[in-house]
View 1 (cartoon, rainbow, N blue to C red):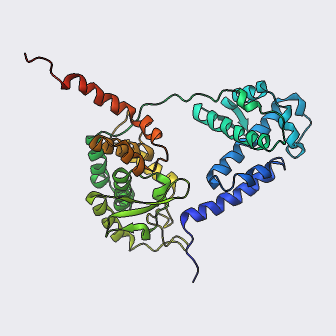
View 2: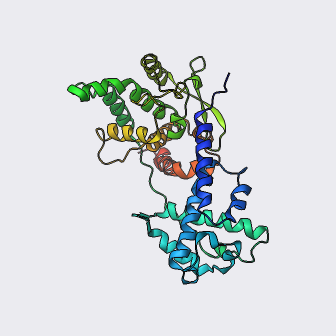
View 3: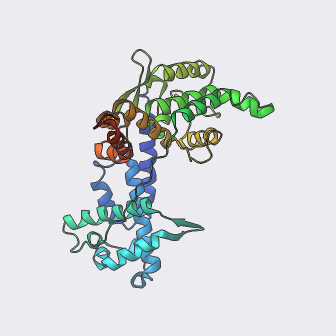
Length: 351
């Protein structure tokens, strides 16, 4: 009997094949670097780094007069020693807005930081192995990330969102009503699961029906980095999942998608983009001032859990944060609100 290939294994295979194609467009010496980081990074990270490095070499060909008659395949590792700190600073400036074929691309703080971090990692590999004498990337500051306030749904908005998914189609007619009825149980189960467990959208779409354990009310998720973990859910999530699973039994999936927990209307495993679209579609009916995405539902869960327990380590563990400082950074504002309560909690003198 053939072994079942999981969604995450399939994604890794696709990313590996894509990486091979991108590597063909990069200078040949880059292969050593990607081979070296294979065991310490995910396939998703490696494909992102490959695209980022291709932009760097493209920048050198387009913007640096020293390389105007060169091609990507002409570059050898020696080229890295020809780059000075000022070139890296110019590259940072270039990244803010640049042309990519017919498209104009732009990067905010996070995009800039990731691309410079990729370049730093790339340079560090060759520098440590004494294949180059200089490392100008360490002389240039990594762009600072300004923290954004957490956008999340308030308790009443959570209830309104779930109520709307459950009853919002009552006024619809025709094809819209048919589509609403067809997807209602799935959408309610999906959004309830995201709100009730705080799992990432990528973890949600990767779930197989076998990952749901009603005996212990837990789901087995594959976290970022490939670690598996059981996340537990409450009675509201259980009820929504059971209702959806009854509907799911009547769906005949496309071959190869038999194990997927959540199906698209095409009877395939639902994708990240589809989940993002349906969350935005419903959330727009509840709030026009907050841009709600699946990640914001994760923040909503994290906030509620922290307010209920006050245990930042529990929140970090359940959300799958490797570093509790990531969690602290996100929920520091809540700590501040609690500290403010201390100002009025103690009475020094009775009136």
